[in-house]
Length: 411
Ligand SMILES: *Cc1c(COP(=O)(O)O)cnc(C)c1O
Image: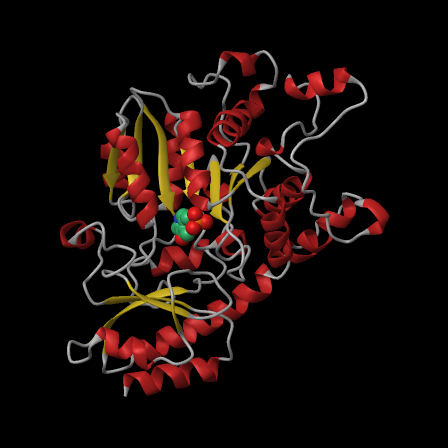
């Protein structure tokens, strides 16, 4: 009987099975910008999409490809393209697939920079509607005949709202809308968006997949579920060269990655690739730490509110239990008014005051003053972000050390 390898085994052995030189277990860091061919026909065929290969590494390198193979396997997808950052992945994909006159529905609970770049698209003339994506009714009301793409995150950052992922997937499938899911917060280890009919899955590789806070990267995976054949914005030149299944991914690579130029460096691809080998182990530990800390905070008199999908009190706790393997490493807390938020943060000696998330180390940041500062108080309130909210990205430290640090800081 055919045996399907598990999540970690697949990632660990992926490079090796691609047969790198000398029996190496890692794909080498290929730094060449360009690639030469003995027969010019090979170069021409690569340009014309008739043959797989490399021409100029802005649109792909062997090291990035090896990582793309792994992400495709993790997401159970058809093909993946990597980018220099998660933001480059989002921006390039929208630039590649959307035209003037098209409409996009997006969750109003979004990563701050995603919301910011969507504002830039609005300023350029694209039409967006932002909705409470936890409610399918709200999402349905926002869809128009010219809606081409629907964008949601799995667990929103920082207030941990969970989009109604399954029902939105059904809606998009019925209406022929591209369903783009930002899976950064869950990562493919906790959640496979293809199960809820996602068309495109985006990941910030900077976060859990790379995992060590030492390289930036992003990716977009085509799950193979969307029917690109009649999608109106496919560039005519691609239609004659490639099969309809790969219209979308070809256009994202050429019009998105190649033209916008947000290319993942081979060095970063290598770092992320090595980091990804322990994704499951790190996340297991981070999720267990986060669950224990959320339970501790919930019972603490100095904590007013805890936002964590693993708690029964979380509005989408049942949905999270059904869809995700675990509840993630991210949570937010609101302190009692009697504690000064900055004083509390400065008392933390182990937890790092820092803006990243998905690192191996536990990081804390006051949300309203930093990552959501530009938005202003009113927009923050719409997104469920209070002025005293602190976001915590829980790492893989020993739990007792984390508990000790928070206990001391809470006094
Ligand atoms: C960090 C993040 C991004 C952007 O990724 P970068 O790699 O920092 O550009 C997008 N979405 C979410 C949910 C993120 O957390």
